[in-house]
Length: 502
Image (tube, rainbow, N blue to C red; front, side):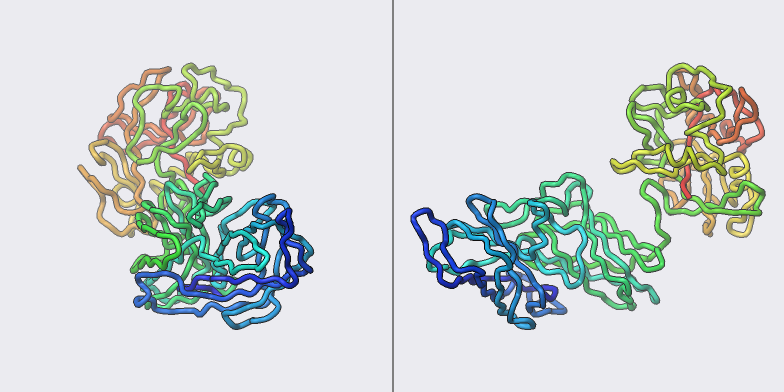
């Protein structure tokens, strides 16, 4: 079926040679035949619809019909005539018979392994999901199909040229929009899944070339009050445009619209990372790679490693359910424990792996949005030196070009690191906002057992580089002094970790 923007489906169903016996089972010659026709989608905004598609049947369209009493007997029906029109005839594919009540679904792919599954991936030619149920009388009264959802029209204008759009993902921060569902008595889809999955509109291998004007896209969305919608527009070259904070009250069987204008496509940013890119090198610039910094310092919640939600957040005491200072250890358990037992002979490490090693990055994970994410690591000493002193930012190197110290972000002392493409002024003094992509590392102090000393005054962040069995390198600053990294720190000192991902 061609994609629907403002139409709903109504269906009349008839069978040949049908009778009803005392057991309420339909005695019919099979295969049966179904006739379907279309009606308009209810919409208070119909006059505002910009592009309208007439609903027409397409070759190989299928319906799924199941016994509404036993739930056992079921069959599919395939279009045999009416292609290209809004009235079609479907023929039963098998020989199933039904009792007096049936439930029917369109498209047939909604039913997967005996469960109703709302499509997480949709296409521009996606058929609008429909449903009906009714007692199955011998005279085969008409069955009216209604939409299980609503149509959401996304009007997108990026105002950027030469962008070919690959997909659009829509997610809600507190609701699940796809996955296993059930049909409510009202006839609308109720999502049963709880994994916060969204819906992705796949625009095909060729994508859609965006001009500088408005572009119209349509998704089929279950009804609901969505308070925290995020749209992720992904281009063929991997760049993305992410728009958050959208709201929509979507009633069932209606047409809805959200307009998004002016947002720009940028390089894709991994979940849990800040958008700025930072060049690092282990060999003084001979081989350079770019990394993203985590959204906040690493902490351990008693079960999982996570990132602080905000850059300035940290705990200034030791809690088993929120450890924010770690020992330089070869064991995660020792790293967040109250005491420290050196493990100085073991160089195989998970939290502090050298940048040239991959084993630990493949096994160490951080919980990001409820899912384990691999690839996070600490920078080596050489990478910190290149990041802070050797790379060129805004035409210069070193202090107040690649980084600035003695910055107070929301009242917390720390230092900031500027991304490669930063072109603003050096940040200094008290600030309540940071430019996009700028990293803030708070002065979190140093932990000794369960006590944290000198929070707000001492910055101490581990590198992944040991100097010997007892000491490892850290990036250090005390109060308003500039950063230094040539003073190895004893591994029993609990220092902060700000991880990166390539």
